[in-house]
Amino acid sequence: MTSAATPAPSSPTIDDPAYRGAVLDLLGILAYGELASFSRLAGDALYAPDLRGQLTLSRMASGELSHLDVIEQLVTRIGGDLEAVMAASSDILGDFDARTTPRDWWERLIKTYVGYGLVLDFQREVSVRLDPEVRAVVDDVLADNGYADFVVSVLEPVLATDTQLGSRLALWGRRVVGEALNVAQTALVRHPSLVLLLTGGNEDEVEATKMLNRLAGGHARRMDRLGLTA
Amino acid sequence: MTSAATPAPSSPTIDDPAYRGAVLDLLGILAYGELASFSRLAGDALYAPDLRGQLTLSRMASGELSHLDVIEQLVTRIGGDLEAVMAASSDILGDFDARTTPRDWWERLIKTYVGYGLVLDFQREVSVRLDPEVRAVVDDVLADNGYADFVVSVLEPVLATDTQLGSRLALWGRRVVGEALNVAQTALVRHPSLVLLLTGGNEDEVEATKMLNRLAGGHARRMDRLGLTA
Image (cartoon, rainbow over all chains, first blue to last red; front, side, top):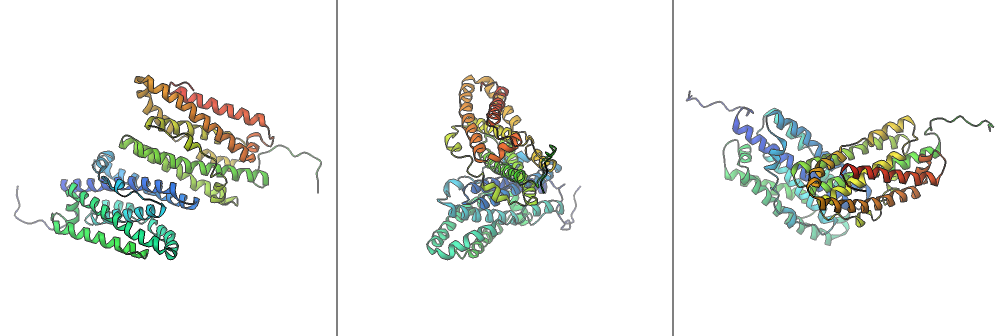
């Protein structure tokens, strides 16, 4: 049967195979992002110069990982498998880490601040067109965990007295964000379904480019919070 | 007022300053142990050869860290400060890690299996004379998290076909346990209050030596589970 009438625009439903596939892709990216954030924050914790910093970062790491449970429940409910959807994103970071090896604690902080902030923004960008059930899970996963505030509180007093460090970290932030934007672009190319979520079916390259520009804008605001030029 | 009568033996109470001090020492050691286990398991996860192992170890790491909350609540309730009691144990590992750098994934697994098992046994040994409230928290923290079963399930099939690896790992296990027993001994020397908990006020060196022997026995049983000679 065919129908000549154009269907009315409505909230996407999980029964639509294209939407379901896009949601599974998105959940895989979110889950892999949580695992990667967990590893990064747990690794950073080892370098924290004091016990308080070590505890704070370790607890944030655990908080990220706890999101995996709610993601896994949703993936299972819509007939997917957590490991399978994660595997599709598992090489998305490519050589990001090899290209951005921090030389000290400050560069490490900035790397995670820049990279983590951009990943969150990216995930929020591709999460705009969701049905309410998926939306609730994604909002929970992408909630602010206080990491940016932590970095600002640690770096602000140091940067206030050390302008040389500020210049070095501004430069370093530019390098990290360049690599992170490459990762975002690769993710869009590898997962056309994300562009579908982003644009609502309109596979528009212009929309993807605009999104990358918005990501760069978010980065500039983050650096500005530290008084650094992006 | 003085009393000539000897008080009847009873469960220790937190109002006794010596007992309270010992409990805070113990909770500090438990908390630091949880943080160290978190870091080790999260670090091991990065080396896991597949996504399943990475997820399993990351989740176990988070599980360890979640115990910090219940420890912190108890520390606060009895008038202590989590960071302060942890700081007293923060250099207890000394150069354990520098002396036991694993050369591959198998040595890494065995190192955590041996070290983690011994730390748990040690913590259980010094947790025998506790009042019910502290006991409940400690039992919760020291519950089996399934790590040993995970290692056995991973290593058993590999060791069944590779006797050379078995010999190497048996040797490696001996080296790790030697260093771990040194750490346990240092902990007892640094925290005489633990000996108090172990012996019930009887500061008996023989009791401490017996305890170290029991730790060695626990290690032998763990290696035996893998079919390796301790």
